[in-house]
Image (tube, rainbow, N blue to C red; front, top):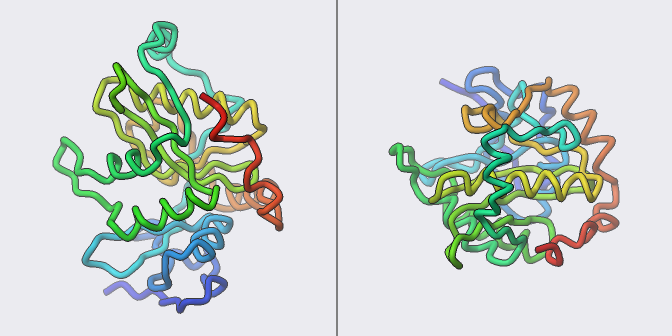
Length: 235
Protein backbone atom coordinates (compact mmCIF):
# COMPACT_ATOMS: atom_id res chain seq x y z
CA UNK A 1 0.00 0.00 0.00
CA UNK A 2 1.26 3.46 -0.94
CA UNK A 3 1.31 6.10 1.80
CA UNK A 4 1.57 9.79 0.92
CA UNK A 5 0.76 12.94 2.90
CA UNK A 6 -2.55 14.68 2.21
CA UNK A 7 -2.56 18.43 2.08
CA UNK A 8 -5.32 20.78 3.10
CA UNK A 9 -6.61 23.86 1.33
CA UNK A 10 -3.53 25.91 2.20
CA UNK A 11 -1.41 26.22 -0.95
CA UNK A 12 1.77 26.46 1.15
CA UNK A 13 1.44 22.98 2.68
CA UNK A 14 3.19 20.95 -0.03
CA UNK A 15 5.81 18.64 1.46
CA UNK A 16 9.43 18.96 0.29
CA UNK A 17 9.89 17.43 -3.16
CA UNK A 18 12.69 15.31 -1.75
CA UNK A 19 9.91 13.23 -0.16
CA UNK A 20 8.46 12.24 -3.55
CA UNK A 21 8.25 8.48 -4.10
CA UNK A 22 10.51 6.63 -6.48
CA UNK A 23 7.68 4.21 -7.35
CA UNK A 24 5.46 5.52 -8.74
CA UNK A 25 8.03 8.05 -9.86
CA UNK A 26 7.42 11.46 -8.33
CA UNK A 27 4.18 10.92 -6.41
CA UNK A 28 4.38 13.50 -3.65
CA UNK A 29 1.00 14.21 -2.05
CA UNK A 30 -2.76 14.08 -2.40
CA UNK A 31 -5.64 16.40 -1.62
CA UNK A 32 -5.81 20.17 -1.84
CA UNK A 33 -7.64 21.97 -4.63
CA UNK A 34 -7.15 23.33 -8.15
CA UNK A 35 -7.56 27.01 -7.34
CA UNK A 36 -5.18 29.35 -9.17
CA UNK A 37 -3.19 30.13 -6.02
CA UNK A 38 -2.64 26.43 -5.34
CA UNK A 39 -1.63 25.62 -8.90
CA UNK A 40 0.79 28.54 -9.15
CA UNK A 41 2.31 27.69 -5.78
CA UNK A 42 2.78 24.10 -6.97
CA UNK A 43 4.28 24.91 -10.37
CA UNK A 44 6.82 27.35 -9.02
CA UNK A 45 8.07 24.43 -6.87
CA UNK A 46 8.13 22.05 -9.84
CA UNK A 47 4.98 20.22 -8.68
CA UNK A 48 1.99 19.49 -10.90
CA UNK A 49 -1.39 17.69 -10.59
CA UNK A 50 -2.08 14.42 -12.38
CA UNK A 51 -4.96 12.13 -11.46
CA UNK A 52 -7.97 10.25 -12.81
CA UNK A 53 -11.65 11.03 -12.27
CA UNK A 54 -11.96 8.30 -9.63
CA UNK A 55 -8.93 9.51 -7.65
CA UNK A 56 -8.31 12.41 -5.29
CA UNK A 57 -6.10 15.21 -6.60
CA UNK A 58 -2.57 13.81 -6.78
CA UNK A 59 0.57 15.96 -6.93
CA UNK A 60 3.83 14.92 -8.61
CA UNK A 61 7.49 15.90 -8.80
CA UNK A 62 9.19 13.25 -10.94
CA UNK A 63 12.93 12.66 -11.23
CA UNK A 64 14.59 12.96 -13.63
CA UNK A 65 12.75 15.82 -15.33
CA UNK A 66 12.25 16.02 -19.11
CA UNK A 67 12.99 19.51 -20.42
CA UNK A 68 14.01 21.56 -23.44
CA UNK A 69 16.42 24.47 -23.46
CA UNK A 70 14.96 26.61 -26.27
CA UNK A 71 18.33 28.02 -27.33
CA UNK A 72 19.64 24.47 -27.85
CA UNK A 73 16.66 23.11 -29.77
CA UNK A 74 17.28 21.88 -33.32
CA UNK A 75 14.37 20.47 -35.36
CA UNK A 76 15.00 17.37 -37.44
CA UNK A 77 15.56 17.61 -41.19
CA UNK A 78 12.10 16.18 -41.87
CA UNK A 79 10.49 18.68 -39.51
CA UNK A 80 12.39 21.54 -41.13
CA UNK A 81 10.83 20.53 -44.44
CA UNK A 82 7.36 20.68 -42.91
CA UNK A 83 8.06 24.13 -41.50
CA UNK A 84 9.41 25.40 -44.82
CA UNK A 85 6.25 24.27 -46.60
CA UNK A 86 4.19 26.34 -44.14
CA UNK A 87 1.61 23.59 -44.04
CA UNK A 88 0.03 25.03 -40.92
CA UNK A 89 -1.08 28.44 -39.80
CA UNK A 90 0.01 28.96 -36.20
CA UNK A 91 -1.78 31.18 -33.68
CA UNK A 92 -1.46 31.74 -29.95
CA UNK A 93 -4.15 32.08 -27.28
CA UNK A 94 -7.00 32.30 -29.78
CA UNK A 95 -8.93 29.13 -28.80
CA UNK A 96 -7.43 27.98 -25.50
CA UNK A 97 -10.60 26.13 -24.44
CA UNK A 98 -10.73 24.19 -27.71
CA UNK A 99 -7.10 23.16 -27.37
CA UNK A 100 -7.39 21.83 -23.82
CA UNK A 101 -10.62 20.00 -24.65
CA UNK A 102 -8.92 18.41 -27.68
CA UNK A 103 -5.99 17.40 -25.47
CA UNK A 104 -8.39 15.81 -23.00
CA UNK A 105 -9.89 13.39 -25.53
CA UNK A 106 -8.77 9.73 -25.38
CA UNK A 107 -5.89 8.88 -27.71
CA UNK A 108 -6.16 6.67 -30.77
CA UNK A 109 -3.95 4.07 -29.06
CA UNK A 110 -6.69 3.47 -26.51
CA UNK A 111 -5.14 5.36 -23.60
CA UNK A 112 -7.57 7.21 -21.39
CA UNK A 113 -7.27 10.82 -20.35
CA UNK A 114 -6.01 12.41 -17.15
CA UNK A 115 -7.37 15.84 -18.10
CA UNK A 116 -10.61 15.72 -16.15
CA UNK A 117 -13.43 18.27 -16.38
CA UNK A 118 -12.18 19.85 -13.16
CA UNK A 119 -8.70 20.15 -14.68
CA UNK A 120 -10.10 21.71 -17.86
CA UNK A 121 -12.02 24.30 -15.85
CA UNK A 122 -9.03 25.04 -13.63
CA UNK A 123 -6.68 25.72 -16.54
CA UNK A 124 -9.25 27.77 -18.42
CA UNK A 125 -9.42 29.93 -15.32
CA UNK A 126 -5.62 30.24 -15.31
CA UNK A 127 -5.78 31.22 -18.96
CA UNK A 128 -8.26 34.00 -18.19
CA UNK A 129 -5.88 35.22 -15.48
CA UNK A 130 -3.01 35.34 -17.97
CA UNK A 131 -0.93 32.40 -16.74
CA UNK A 132 -1.98 29.54 -19.06
CA UNK A 133 -1.43 29.75 -22.81
CA UNK A 134 -2.12 27.77 -25.96
CA UNK A 135 -0.55 27.47 -29.38
CA UNK A 136 -2.80 26.33 -32.20
CA UNK A 137 -2.04 24.74 -35.58
CA UNK A 138 -4.63 25.24 -38.34
CA UNK A 139 -5.17 23.69 -41.74
CA UNK A 140 -7.92 25.04 -44.02
CA UNK A 141 -9.40 26.88 -41.02
CA UNK A 142 -9.62 23.64 -39.02
CA UNK A 143 -7.85 23.22 -35.69
CA UNK A 144 -5.62 20.19 -36.32
CA UNK A 145 -3.08 20.41 -33.51
CA UNK A 146 -1.81 22.40 -30.58
CA UNK A 147 -0.47 22.49 -27.08
CA UNK A 148 -1.04 24.32 -23.82
CA UNK A 149 0.85 25.07 -20.65
CA UNK A 150 1.64 27.62 -17.97
CA UNK A 151 4.21 30.40 -18.16
CA UNK A 152 5.76 31.63 -14.92
CA UNK A 153 8.62 34.05 -15.21
CA UNK A 154 11.06 32.64 -17.76
CA UNK A 155 9.76 29.06 -17.62
CA UNK A 156 7.06 27.48 -19.77
CA UNK A 157 5.52 24.39 -18.18
CA UNK A 158 4.14 22.29 -21.03
CA UNK A 159 1.07 20.30 -20.08
CA UNK A 160 -0.26 18.47 -23.12
CA UNK A 161 -0.43 18.51 -26.90
CA UNK A 162 -2.68 16.96 -29.52
CA UNK A 163 -2.59 16.36 -33.25
CA UNK A 164 -5.26 15.21 -35.69
CA UNK A 165 -2.96 15.76 -38.67
CA UNK A 166 0.60 14.54 -39.04
CA UNK A 167 3.22 16.96 -37.67
CA UNK A 168 0.66 19.54 -36.48
CA UNK A 169 1.65 19.38 -32.82
CA UNK A 170 5.34 19.34 -33.76
CA UNK A 171 4.87 22.51 -35.80
CA UNK A 172 3.10 24.14 -32.85
CA UNK A 173 5.95 23.12 -30.58
CA UNK A 174 8.56 24.58 -32.93
CA UNK A 175 6.63 27.83 -32.89
CA UNK A 176 6.61 27.74 -29.09
CA UNK A 177 10.39 27.30 -29.07
CA UNK A 178 10.85 30.26 -31.41
CA UNK A 179 8.60 32.41 -29.28
CA UNK A 180 10.45 31.40 -26.11
CA UNK A 181 13.76 32.36 -27.69
CA UNK A 182 12.39 35.77 -28.59
CA UNK A 183 11.02 36.39 -25.10
CA UNK A 184 14.01 35.08 -23.09
CA UNK A 185 12.08 32.09 -21.78
CA UNK A 186 14.99 29.81 -20.94
CA UNK A 187 13.33 26.53 -20.03
CA UNK A 188 10.44 24.42 -21.32
CA UNK A 189 9.31 21.76 -18.85
CA UNK A 190 7.85 18.55 -20.29
CA UNK A 191 7.52 16.68 -16.97
CA UNK A 192 8.33 13.07 -18.01
CA UNK A 193 9.97 11.83 -21.19
CA UNK A 194 8.05 9.82 -23.77
CA UNK A 195 8.90 8.71 -27.33
CA UNK A 196 7.25 11.77 -28.89
CA UNK A 197 9.22 14.21 -26.72
CA UNK A 198 12.41 12.24 -27.22
CA UNK A 199 11.94 12.45 -31.00
CA UNK A 200 11.83 16.23 -30.63
CA UNK A 201 15.05 16.26 -28.60
CA UNK A 202 13.93 16.42 -24.97
CA UNK A 203 16.65 15.87 -22.40
CA UNK A 204 16.55 14.72 -18.78
CA UNK A 205 17.95 16.66 -15.85
CA UNK A 206 17.91 15.89 -12.14
CA UNK A 207 15.24 17.27 -9.85
CA UNK A 208 17.88 19.32 -8.04
CA UNK A 209 19.08 21.01 -11.23
CA UNK A 210 15.49 21.59 -12.33
CA UNK A 211 14.58 23.27 -9.07
CA UNK A 212 17.66 25.47 -9.21
CA UNK A 213 16.47 26.64 -12.62
CA UNK A 214 13.03 27.44 -11.21
CA UNK A 215 14.49 29.39 -8.31
CA UNK A 216 16.53 31.49 -10.72
CA UNK A 217 13.95 31.96 -13.48
CA UNK A 218 10.69 32.54 -11.58
CA UNK A 219 10.51 35.89 -9.75
CA UNK A 220 9.08 36.20 -6.27
CA UNK A 221 6.56 38.72 -7.57
CA UNK A 222 4.93 36.86 -10.46
CA UNK A 223 2.78 39.86 -11.30
CA UNK A 224 5.92 41.41 -12.77
CA UNK A 225 5.97 38.67 -15.40
CA UNK A 226 2.27 37.94 -15.79
CA UNK A 227 1.79 39.55 -19.17
CA UNK A 228 5.38 39.64 -20.34
CA UNK A 229 5.86 38.47 -23.89
CA UNK A 230 2.47 39.74 -25.01
CA UNK A 231 1.38 36.21 -25.89
CA UNK A 232 -1.96 37.04 -27.46
CA UNK A 233 -0.51 39.55 -29.94
CA UNK A 234 1.73 37.04 -31.69
CA UNK A 235 0.19 35.32 -34.73
